[in-house]
Length: 185
Image (cartoon, rainbow, N blue to C red; front, side):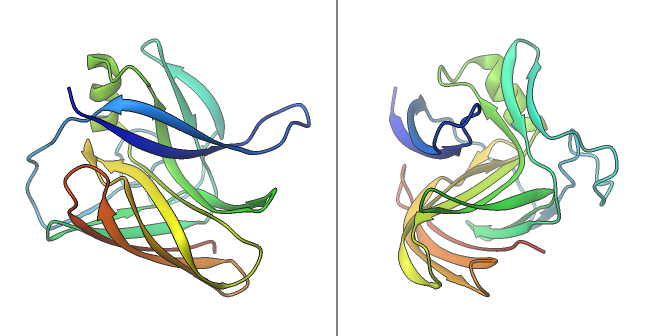
């Protein structure tokens, strides 16, 4: 079983600080086809296109923990000739960590069959770096789109007073090129 690092920002409740959590999970490829895809992550891939009915926070789905993000943040990524888009998320700037969380993240460190099935249903995009000002930094994106993993490390550029960003890098597993961008509004 091949393992990779998944970089993820979690907001710790009850006044505790924000932390970077590294999870080791096994990786599964997905040979999905098509060149452009778009979903609204207010729930399962439903294409609704707005934030109505979005309930942010931790949820348990079929025994697997997930975290849903709501707001006006949007992202897009290009991976292996496919264009993916995400909506309904928020940017963050806490404790020196800056980035975005968009969609619904499946929190399954064991890479179970149930968790992998949810990654086919819920899409997630996350980006982060450590900074307090616009500029170009080493950064990470973590995410999946209809089960296709795009978790990468590379160069992350923040602009518009930390309210938008772009990324160029390679996947942690396989070294495939990924480009991405996001905006908070």
